Length: 202
Image (cartoon, rainbow, N blue to C red):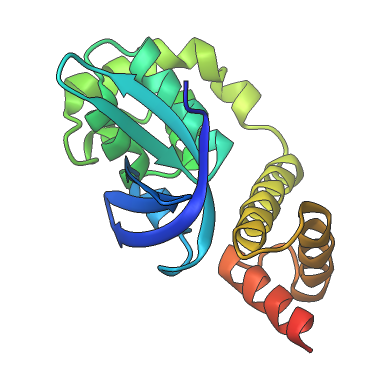
């Protein structure tokens, strides 16, 4: 099982990235949510992966965060009628936090607007994932708790981006925590990374 790949981005499209891993090129299918977080071509990146073995091919799916990969696996292993292609569409049309909220609140309408997901598939997603993700009451915790969760996710994404750019894990954590104090918890991942790089270059 290939659980992750670390290498240079040689080419990137909204649905696929090619990585050079020690001279071997890997084509990896990705959701838009991961494409938005990819570094520029020529830069190093760490992609968490899922390997799907078919009769005619071995297909790698890649994700920039563990939350994306976990949700992808939950969709293909739990929801009947959903394979890797539709699961990627779901993650391209809605981020993990919004998807969890839609399932918890039974928001079939929002889910059915995702490309490739009709009303019946959206209903299956809600019914078959509800118990896995938790009830709406459990999901709708205090706004402070939700803000903390989103803030932690931003930090994780920003740290991963710095590690892909050559930072050590500990240095990346320290740099992102420091920039978040300066910019505030509402700062976007891109702003946190940009500020950390500027501070490092100063």
